[in-house]
Image (tube, rainbow, N blue to C red):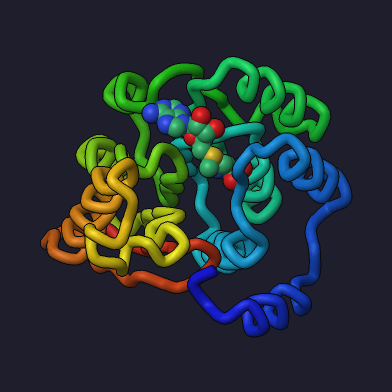
Length: 213
Ligand SMILES: C[S@@+](CC[C@H](N)C(=O)[O-])C[C@H]1O[C@@H](n2cnc3c(N)ncnc32)[C@H](O)[C@@H]1O
């Protein structure tokens, strides 16, 4: 928790909820330890989709398709391209897209995003990066190429339950590389001339960036 639990619960209690089928996917994901966006992150995505009305969305890290489906609900005019590398999750995401009647608007690409991103030819109004935290910096050049001027980049889990604010000696040796990489990523987002970025303590930390012309 990066904000006080009481505050987070109160804000969550105001959440109007999602369509029933998404609540079912959420429940199953939690049961099977599939990480998906938190409610408050979903709420932020809804706000951004409503204000931007994106036509093209790029997602890195699909898992079982929960956030892709949510974005599709929130951005009814959007075609979504999403990437996932774990076979079992790909199969479940495909099933979820099909059952929700969204298979024609969500294109799921299988494989490692580092290999797939360079093959894409699109200009995204919205890009959602929610994959391996240690790779965000490696995804960035291709995500920037694929982001339209004025497009919004949403990077999830950037505060890593608060660990990112700790000294590198306070995090376990195993987590030090990822800790440093996330710090480097946030520094890069804030210091690029072609991005304007703000970091929010929403969910597990969300960086919002706009691509400047
Ligand atoms: C946090 S989950 C995504 C959750 C999803 N966005 C949602 O909220 O419903 C991250 C996913 O990214 C996938 N992933 C991690 N690194 C990847 C990579 N380099 N290429 C493709 N998928 C990757 C993982 O297998 C995992 O399913």
